[in-house]
Image (tube, helix red, strand yellow):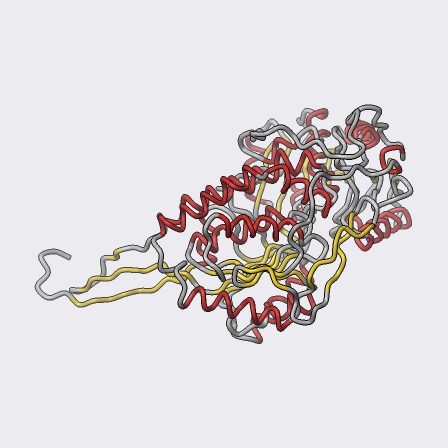
Length: 535
């Protein structure tokens, strides 16, 4: 497990139940793990102690087959083997789901029930998440490849916290009474926007489910959610729990499928009132076009990044190395805000590089169900090959390969933690989002230079700054054109902290109070007053 994984949270979460011990080859878990050897990757994979119960579409409160009868396989990234076959939703299924969501919004109880009752249902759901923490975590790791300890001790508790947070907001959403010129009573109403279409990615399936569904439902909307084709299983499982908590039919509909079919149908649907998408910038452009060409629905986009992690000359090098390592390698490097451009001041560059190499070499890679594993496989073969292609590009472009640079083991989609030095700004590995365990270390001389180079990117999602000097921190915080700046920390994702990007990293903010505005309309109501006692 990443040494600094706890910095994901502003406070620590601890699982209320013992960690799940997978069945099968579980004896002696955590013993004999070989760092940077193929041993862990080529062993027979551990059998997770969870079964797939839900692999159909969830429409109007019922699990149903796709209209076409089609299915597609979801794969275990540890081996490439099929876990199960999942219903393949297409345009007709999106129509069915949107119809159910529209009926639930227009005629159903969800937007009409009191906000307090909506809050109670969301809180009951959070309790069920907590109760089923280990099963949910095992399903997430099996389908995605991330370490089980990360799923069970960090991400499922974060999901639970997110829904308790938004449950708290449900009965605190209100408008204003506004004094104006003249004898008029003016008020604003904050109304649910309607049917929200939501498309989530494969790197954090559960957390993105929470970021999208939580605020939408707290505001009284209904939802059609399309899962990523690589990781459809956990959203189906937790959505079933939501209905057990009392969610009315049609309020939350889940369609598994592919972008060009199900995703495009959802983005262009005339009965969808709002769209939210997390994924690549190129796909985000397509989503925006489809939304504009249909009914001009508003769109929230959380897209790609190429985040700078800036190590200043006064930094504690050992701590900076560990934090930069976490900022890049966490979640197998499959993180939109990963600190993928590590800028190091020239005075500490050589020391930092040697220690960063050593830390990458000692990173523990292997079966994510094995205790003590820090890095599992990449999500699928496409991502695996894409990352290896970027590594080849770095070598061919003249960067120095310091560590890794090749697959890990003979089976599955594992890649050795990779470090490049002598990286230049015009290299592909310094410009494009790799989305993998590849750290690029760049040298800088002064603040003006690193500000200019950091901002010379089409992305603007996040940045990390490592310094003891408050003036340096303040200078960089205001100069960097990004949506989040972490000072002497990284990846702090509390439910209350807004997240989103500048430039081509997206539109709008998710999490926190700012996310509620994505799912509300503001209506002004003006009434004349006769003989008012006061104005």
